[in-house]
Amino acid sequence: MSYGLPALVSLGVIMALVLVLPFSVRWVEEELEAFLLVMGCLAVSISQIWTGHLVLEALSEPLKISCAVLLFGFAFRRFRGAIANGVSRLSAKLGLPVFFFILVVTLGLASSVVTAIVAALVLVEAISALNLDRATERSLVILACYSIGLGAALTPIGEPLSTIATTRLVGPPHHADFFFLAKLLWPWLLPGILVLGGLAARQGGGIVAHSKGLSQDSHENTWTVFRRALKVYVFVAALVLLGRGLSPLVERWLVRMPANALYWANISSAALDNATLAAAELSPRMDIERIRAVLIALLVSGGMLIPGNIPNIISAEKLGIKSREWARAAIPLGLVMMTVYFVALRFIAP
Image (tube, rainbow, N blue to C red; front, side):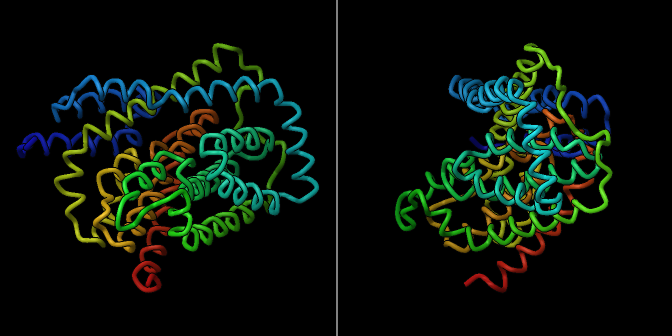
């Protein structure tokens, strides 16, 4: 379908609203799921791509994530006391800097096997048990979510982006198999995960324990667990619609950009579904260096805002982190990482 300038401008306005309003309007920040769902429906309507298949996709795509949040929510509620005791003992034995480093690095590497969803749920329980000051715990959550987002991309089972990337490149000339992304990305992502672990370790000094930090409601009832899973469901469904609705904008401008411009334009994945962007941008005709650059840009920028990836969504929802809180800490870090990777890709990559 060919889209005229008014439609493309309207989609651009929707994208701008998604990037700006969560930080400037308190109602939007507090009701982010509903806001994104409305924006997604508007985008799909403007793009005129409402189909039964899209509705089914929006209804089915969030099921795995929300069911995991629901099931692990009940399981962790049952064993929360034991988990808290285990985290307290381990952090006391190792010391907070070492514990933070191990937590961030281990979750990052394990997420490619246990999935980003499970890694994020484990992170939430560990943070809830620490009982440290809010600023430190928020920084730790963001560092860990960046790490999980990077590590989950190493296998097709880690997250939707890696699944789509492998599927798109399965044929010639790349013949992507289960370990294709690991071989392509591990020399680049492993140093990033280790650096994130080092930054987390620095958060472990000079902390006042037993302060009012991030935590879930230890007395949550059944309805609270269901409500949280429902909010995650709506959040993911909204991102599916938003990603599909804005696809004409992506296909018209993003995918036609030169490699360097496309790298920086992928900062948009901070607010959009990076799996949708990967599906639109990746092609078997691309050389391996461009594929690597696209994936790294999507993975890093996905940590900047709450909608950027699944670990962010789960952690922010369960721990009550607001959009502005997340952005203040995550955007500067993301921009530094984007810059470092950009320079490395330009001058180190073969």
